[in-house]
Length: 341
Image (cartoon, rainbow, N blue to C red; front, side, top):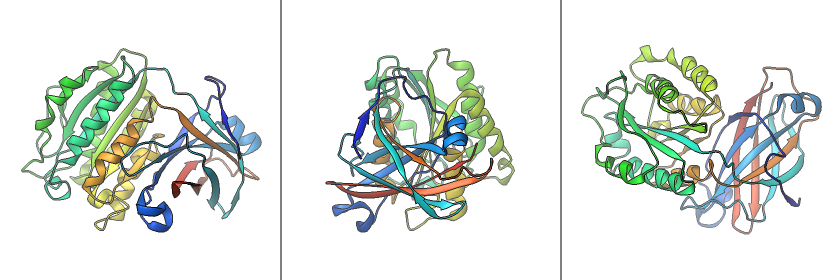
């Protein structure tokens, strides 16, 4: 199918939910395991109910995290639920970059377990690649750096340390990089920290902008009394227009040998329920390429594949499937899901 270039403003879609499954097998990713795929679902309620159409944003990347939107991809889809079946491709288009400034808060897990799951602190250097790319894309983009774990905290926060407030200057963030260290005490207040960061952003940022929260973590929220905060995080993200991108490592990755289903579900759901993207990495060394690829999404061109269901399911039904790209650089498949509006 021919790729169409779409003028700015000609498509207006409500971003729903997205799931990322990076490819790490030769069959999936082509030679040298060089190709991975991010997939984010966009759903316009009226269009979906009338024509069964929805769109999937595709972010193909190589092993370094460079995006490959301009390549001549062949795109196919398959439906898994509510019932397995074919998923016809209606259109394939490249959308121009969104010109609105970007405000991003990076919240890094520095709990004690990161000593094992990221001993070389790749989460810190990966985050540095991320903010340099984002801040270099547009002069008004801004990034803040925070972390959580153990007894970390700051004035105005209970379970989060503010390392560097929102800034347009990458040097201010670079200067704080050494503070990203695993703590000696346990505790992973993932939900509480995410909620604090979203609420803080509401008061700290006046600029009209695209808002993102990027979380890098290895695990399940602890202590257990933090679990009820999950719905509060999702509600706060919706109210504030924040998309959450999550990078899972160790138990929170669906790709590595240490994968734990419950941890993966927690970290993945933070992304899927807020219109974001989940990236599970095979090991800590892959955190940096994953973050480089995610950094291109807010300010870069977007490859959009439109699909159509023969009959829209009832409202509230979970719709899941896969999307596959294939071209000269290889083949990759990503899972996706959304709740029918």
